[in-house]
Length: 277
Image 1: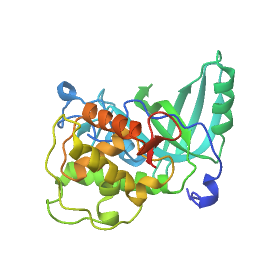
Image 2: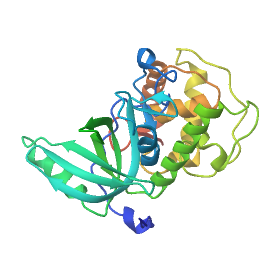
Image 3: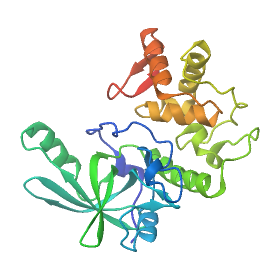
């Protein structure tokens, strides 16, 4: 099935809530059979990966041998059916098609109206959700489905799928080797080719001190950070890890708050996305 992914598909605004969980790093659990070590993080996947590795009817859902918690993918709505309490979508990402079920709350008519307006056939959407199996049929329960308004979101998704697959199956890239552009999507956690990354910074723990504040401000000054709605905390964590900085979410959150209070950052589409002033 050939899909049109031209830039004209992404015009307009839309309801764009942040994914639950807030982080795009981690890529699932800690091993091939990871129930005991399952981490509630978001894994970027293609529908082909899901279908290929979960067709045996098992109770656990995996990609690259790692158990999945939450997943995200980008695709085009090919079918939409409204029911009393839910909307049923078929979404095709160019590699396969997946059923997506979105629960609706009819007690919030304005929210419901926005959802209906955004989930139209032919529109590209980013889906965040959890895999389910009903009568041996795989589907996704979507907790966030937002319209794609920027072509770069598709490129970002494709790069993250490739990067995370290679990271899990082949391990991390050697340190000290600059990885600009497509070879290292996590360096820019986006889709833009960029200058080679700086040498890895020292590993930082839980503190949100001056060094961490300065590094995060530097990340926000990169061209990729100025695109779209900016960065959320998950993207910042990805960018820090790409620099060899193992900062903890509370420390990064404190640094973001400090930079906001200092007038260096401002929030964009919601309280969880920032840009540099």
